[in-house]
Amino acid sequence: GDSVTQTEGQVALSEEDFLTIHCNYSASGYPALFWYVQYPGEGPQFLFRASRDKEKGSSRGFEATYNKETTSFHLQKASVQESDSAVYYCALIASSSFSKLVFGQGTSLSVVP
Amino acid sequence: DPKIIQKPKYLVAVTGSEKILICEQYLGHNAMYWYRQSAKKPLEFMFSYSYQKLMDNQTASSRFQPQSSKKNHLDLQITALKPDDSATYFCAIGGQSQNTLYFGAGTRLSVL
Image (cartoon, rainbow over all chains, first blue to last red; front, side, top):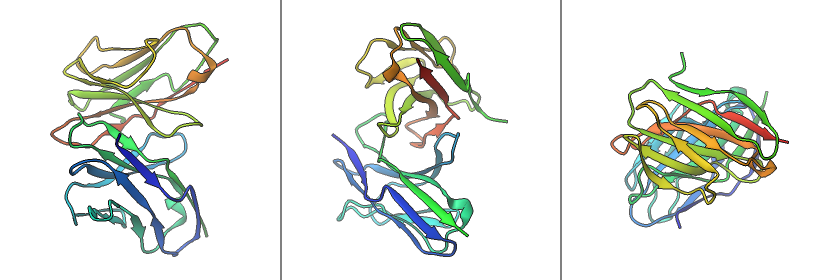
């Protein structure tokens, strides 16, 4: 079945550090790829998406590029802030499914001043 | 104002009882979903509905029954509750044409 793997379970950074969270997927065809962010006590919030090979999605300084060759959609941010502390989820919707989001395990990001 | 309303925010139930989780949306989307998040598993798809009809069901147990009485409602009835049902249940909206899902704040269920 379709799946998403996030390598890092937890990431701890200082403000202004560079962030990378690795995301690899397994699905046939061209799934749509997403990043969501979840703050404590809230539902996941849509960050951005990409639907085609080499397409870049971005929002709030975060970005990721769809790479079909490496089946990856790594999240990056050049300079993190304390307010970026949250759980980040990579997800996909397979082209054959009715908008069924498949989530990765999530990566907890902690940014200290 | 939130456009996806989930009620209640917190719910405590005893084993064997029945509860209904409410979801209402005011964004005019025709597709609605339920997801579950527990300490053991990440966000897990349960059901999808479109125009009040079931599109996909990934829930193994018949104890979980979605109910769509109105176009903008998708409630979740859970019967014979078990401690393993303890989780946060999220309602989401979206659609194939937009291909992006938006989530409510969730109902946190604890089964004792």
